[in-house]
View 1: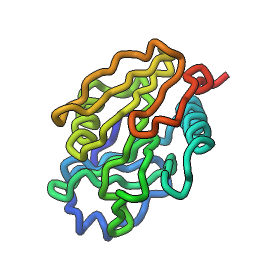
View 2: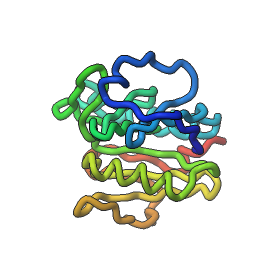
View 3: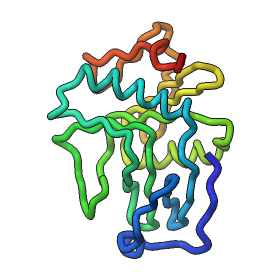
View 4: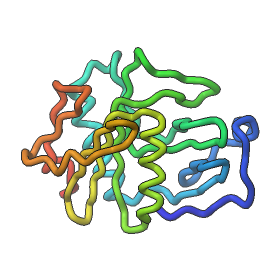
Length: 185
């Protein structure tokens, strides 16, 4: 999504004192606040479908699946936070500090839109790699395709589009996501 930059940069400490946003989404990239519009209906539908399918297959005491807006801190200096569309956490490695998450999810799912510029996508993926997120799924509603990215040597490599119609997260092997069931009808 295209973002509107804030006129100045903020530190982690300043950011903690700011009020929570009530509309849209707010990320901070290298200290610059970026406001994003809320997701479109199809975007939300895809994320809800994935979350519903995953939640039905995991131990919800051990695995947390989040689609609600939350701050994922990539680094404090310069401050960079992201708001993934969907994040899957193992509670044993979840680090919450100052009300925000400071640990890598097992999996992040992002739904692409026409407004996503390649540089924005690359920046977000670089931040996820820096944090150590081992797997990212990129869903494209336009082409009805999914790209699976796996972290190797601090960079993502494409695992190519799955030949099968089912996705299985690397670190949640019992979970199976029917790709056809993800797309809104």
